[in-house]
Length: 330
Image (cartoon, one colour):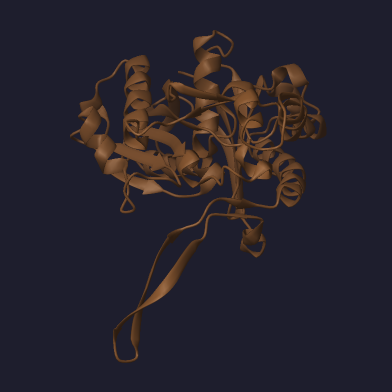
């Protein structure tokens, strides 16, 4: 194994407009109490016509780079984890241009709510082989574009936002201690955002399929069962690889899908609930952005300190899930 990895900076950004539970109660048959008791959510931030995923990501990235104490031109790789790019061809290069990271190669990675963890693990492979030294990882989604706002079961869940971290190569011991990644396509129908098309005849016997993506479709009960069963297992295996136990974990940092899921995972791992990092009440489910959004808030509040050991896990559409155990900072 080559270079070690340290996470040296974090940043986040969210749209200005806040959609509250009471707002949602004016749109569909629900209430603040109903939403909060079942999900832990009270607010979610919604992007306006003038706010894009690229712009939110650029702000989060600049904040992370500033905390790391380097410049944008020091970044040599950018990985954007998103399922909702501004451009179907990808938005990572647009972000590279916005922040002036002229020496960085940039690409998108799509793994839905697992995207940030998958991006971190992907970046680690480039860094451990010495190919890249300063990597910017962004998790960002604007799912409000793809929500059916008349569907009570799903519209209460999702919000928009972006979070970013800077990873730097170090000669000392690696701060990424262990990880796991999984996929199960047989459960793909449990959570998806499918393309629907109509045939457009071109010439005899040849038609093209023109259409667009349809709103998010989710079987909430199946996703809950999947997460509660698989996430503790993935974290447990990552802890085993890191030669750690639950007692060694300072913070549990999970994809912010549902407070009940986070509480159930902590209970199965025998990690005290006070070690859960959660800002789901303010942001709702922001997909790939949720883990770095929560991390950034905890770091800037002084909750997470340099050297703290964090067990992180993302899970969602695909179905995909993964975990990473890391120490914060140098």
